[in-house]
Length: 107
Image (cartoon, rainbow, N blue to C red):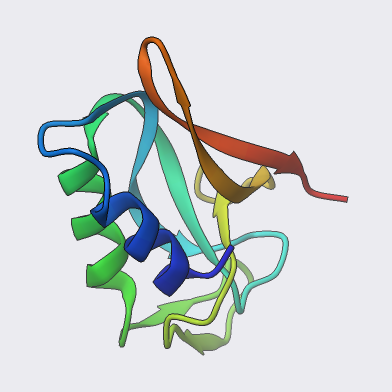
């Protein structure tokens, strides 16, 4: 899911929505340097996650092994620690406990 689409979906959640397992801190993804990664974080508000994503749009990030990559909002988003591969964020779901990230293993 692209940065822009993820911002759009998370922004539509009810005010005060909290993800038990969300994300923060944007950086270049280790698996594909031209894509965005965000690091896992527990108990994070939807607003904090939107802020993380919007701050990445229009920025240039250095790849793990060099190079510079501009994020225009069309890039996919991966949940991964800096320097590690992780899972692609493909959607947002809803449970009795609140919103959740829907993830897909990176192949």
